[in-house]
Every structure is written in structure tokens, then in C-alpha cells.
Image (tube, rainbow, N blue to C red):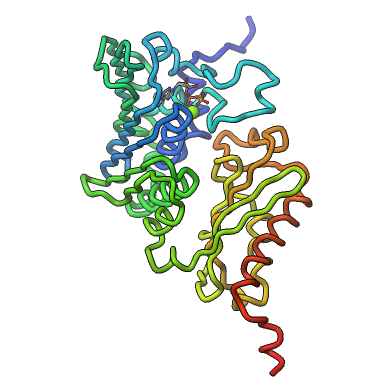
Length: 337
Ligand code: ADP
Ligand code: MG
């Protein structure tokens, strides 16, 4: 008899979780993405012990009906893509249909969700459904993840200090807030509010909420357009500098991405305006046909491959450089005096 067996779904979910759910921040990221994809205008993230004890995300989005709520925890269950064509034109933050299955397999989940017409309450432990009944009719979704990694002790042991884990999540929420100024975000830790944005759509207000009023006043708006891309954002005056590139926030079609070459181009655009090795604060939104942006590189969806990269880099460089030059009196001439 052959030795090969198909894995039980719960086991394969746990394996997938190894990639998708690295730490509490990864859970917050996936759940907030779901809330954004559901059209929410207010999203609350409540953490206990940096999320290791519990992570609760409350949104006011579309919610799910009973059937969808049950299905949402199956692997590869998604409402966001239906065929191969969609995969190359992703307009939502999620698309892999595996976050909820993965998260549920390594935690205890309670879910309240409602479309406004019906309400569902579900409870899962280690990916197995343990309770299912009708629930409240408040439109939106309230999902709570308790005891993350309770059944994967090796992963739990790997967690850094609570402060480090919390730091990652604060950083993440800051980026969501910068990328979605029309959504009101709240982050609270052990009952204490850490971040609260108004969701008014005013970018300078979000900048003030995150970096403080005096920095927000020293950020200059910029925009630009090429054949395939549109960019916009805010760039700090050269008098403000930071020690690392963590203050350069890059968003491609609303998704926070890490892209070494783009961050480098932003830094280049400040060349001669900043002391060597110092970095600016920049928020850069890149908008392009989803066809040009491949986010299906890694399960965490934070890496991206871009087509027409050279055109984009030139656009970024010239837009930011022009904006910054316009605020400074010719630095080269001053040097020659
Ligand atoms: P994906 O986001 O890649 O589709 P997920 O496992 O994160 O996969 O979610 C599965 C499905 O559950 C989503 O496609 C969506 O239909 C539904 N869903 C998840 N979270 C929410 C939410 N907060 N509000 C409404 N629907 C949700
Ligand atoms: Mg998702």
C-alpha cells in the first residue's frame, strides 16, 4: 500500500498558518484588511497583552450572512476572486482566501457578524467549530482571536517581548491610517487608546495624528502622473530628518508594501538636500492598473512586483525632487559661496 496520504484540512491550515500568521501583527493585518475590503468606515483594534492574549477587531462594514460566515473559515474560501482573470486584476487587499482558516487553526475565535438582516455568532477552537447560533443584528463584523498559538507552543515561544510585538502593530496601524484617511482607526492596548484617527479624509490631520502637529505642518503635498502610473503624497521639508527608511511609507493601490528600490528612489530625490545617511518622512501613494502590480509573491502580500518600473521610478524621483527643490533656496550655489 502506498505511503502518501492527503492531509486533513485542519492540518494543512496549520501549516499555511506558519507563513501567514507569523506574529500578532500578522493577525491584525489580515483582519483589518478584511474590514477595509468589507467597506468599513470605522475600525477598532483592541489588544490585550500585545495581542497574545486577545485581538479584537470591530468593523462597521458589510458583514456576512450565515452561510458566508461558516464558509469564511474554510481554506481558499473567498468572495474576492472568482477566476484566473481576477487574479491578475486584484482590487481588494485580500484575495488568497486563507487568512481566516489559518488564523483559526492556531487560536480560539469568536465571531459576531451581521449584514443587518440576519446575525450570526460562531466560536471555533483550533479551527474546529464549537458553537454556532443566531447573533446580534448590528451591521458589521466583530471578531476576537484569543490565545494565539495556544496549540503551536514552538511559535509562541518565539515571540519577542510584548513591547516589540506591540511596536509592530502600532507601526502597522499607522500605515493603514496613512493609506486610508477616510477610515477612522482606533487602536487600544490593555484598555488604553494608543492611536485614534478621525477618518475625515484630511491627510494633514492623519499626519498630525501620527507624527505630531509640528511635523505635519512641515510636510509638503506632491503629485505626478506618467503614462501608466499616478502618484501623490506628502514629503517632509529637508529640515526634518530621520535615522532610517522606516518613515518612508509606500502604498500601491492602497496596499502598504515594502519595496527597496522605490524607497531608495525616494531617498535619492532628496540627494544634497539631506545630510548623508539621513532619511526623510514621506508618504507615497502609487496608483496603477492592478494588471501592472503583482502582489501574489508571498502569502503576507507585502512584497510586490511592478511592471514599467523604470517609468515609475522616474516619476517618483522627479515629482518629489521638484517639490523639495521648490522649498529650498539653491543648495548648490550656497555651497560655492
Ligand atoms: P480573503 O480576504 O483573501 O478573501 P479571508 O480568509 O481573509 O480571505 O476571508 C474570507 C472571506 O470572508 C472574505 O473573502 C470575505 O468574504 C469574508 N470576510 C472576512 N472578514 C470579513 C469582514 N470583516 N467583513 C465582511 N466579510 C468578511
Ligand atoms: Mg483577508
